[in-house]
Each structure stands twice: as C-alpha cells, then as structure tokens.
Amino acid sequence: MNNLTKILLLTMLTASCNTATNTNDLKDGKTDTPKQKVTVMNDTTPKVTGIGGIFFRSINPQEIREWYGANLGLAIDDNGSPFEFRNANRPEEINYLRWSPFEEGTDYFKPSEKEFMINYRVQNIEGLVKKLRDNGVTIVDDIEEFEYGKFVHIMDPEGNKIELWEPIDSFFTQMGGITTK
Image 1 (spheres, rainbow, N blue to C red):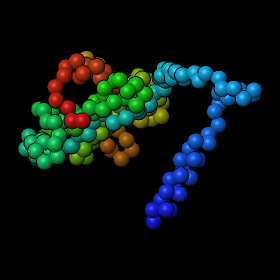
Image 2 (cartoon, rainbow, N blue to C red; image 1 turned 180 degrees about the vertical axis):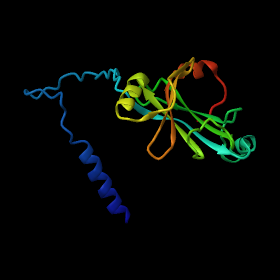
Image 3 (tube, one colour; image 1 turned 180 degrees about the horizontal axis):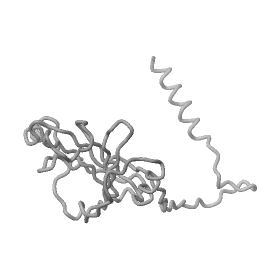
Image 4 (spheres, one colour; image 1 turned 90 degrees about the horizontal axis):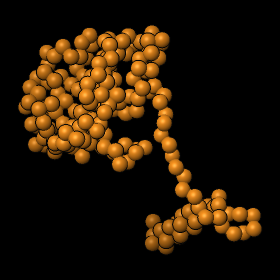
C-alpha cells in the first residue's frame, strides 16, 4: 500500500470516528453537559466468572515448576505460580489464578482419571450448586469454606473433575508474595 493510500485511509477512518452523534445534543442545537454513567455491579447470578486455576499431573512437580520459572518466567512458589490480574468490572481489584503441577499419583483429581483439572472462578456458589443439582450434575463433595474462598467439585459428562471456587481475592493481596503478571 503506498503512502498516499495509507494517508487517505487514515483520514477516512478518523473522519468516521468523529461523526458519531452526541446523545447529549439538545433540540435547540446546544449541548447538554455530559453526565458520567455509573455502573453498579450487583449481579448475583450463579455462574462461572473466569478461570481460577489450571492443575495437572506431573512426574516431578518440583522440577517442572523450576523449568517453567527458569524458561518461561513464571513466579514460582511451593504450589506452582499465582497469576495476578485485574477484575474487568472493578479494575482497582486484584484477582488471582493458580497454575499448579501435582504429583502424578495424586488422589486430588479423583474420581476423574484425567491428567488435568480446571478450577473455575464462580459467583454465588450455593446458588450454582443448587442449579447444577437440579440439572442432574454430579456434585462430588460439599461446599468447603476457607479464608480464601469456598470450593466444591463436580463432574462433567466426560468424567472431568471440575473445581468451582468462589474466591476471596483480598486474602491473597493481603498475604503478599510473588506473582506472575
């Protein structure tokens, strides 16, 4: 693409971006003072809101943690790597995801025989468990509560054990420590 074509394309694109109508324009041609919109996040629908962890079996978890730290730059601790990210609805809030290799013979993934387990971040875990139970989903255990959130495990139709976590991210923020960003 030659320079003239690039300039024309850029000019047309810029002009099209500036032609949006102002919803604050009054009928008499004057412009009303724009008002800031406030978004209130009070959705309590029982649902998954993101990924909370990726867990997999490993022949040598310590060695594999060190490899990922040395070669891919993950911030490694005794349990793997905590990933830090911002909440899309509340950018001032720090959220966490856990990447963690487990011993090959772990029972933590049972009754699944799969080599991995995904942890999903959820809201309203009690409501979600009720919905899942009503839909005939296998609930593996009871909801357990810890200072960093609530957990329960379910099975999908293909035998994958899924961990559901309603997090209390502020616990990890207050705890501090290294994170992968």
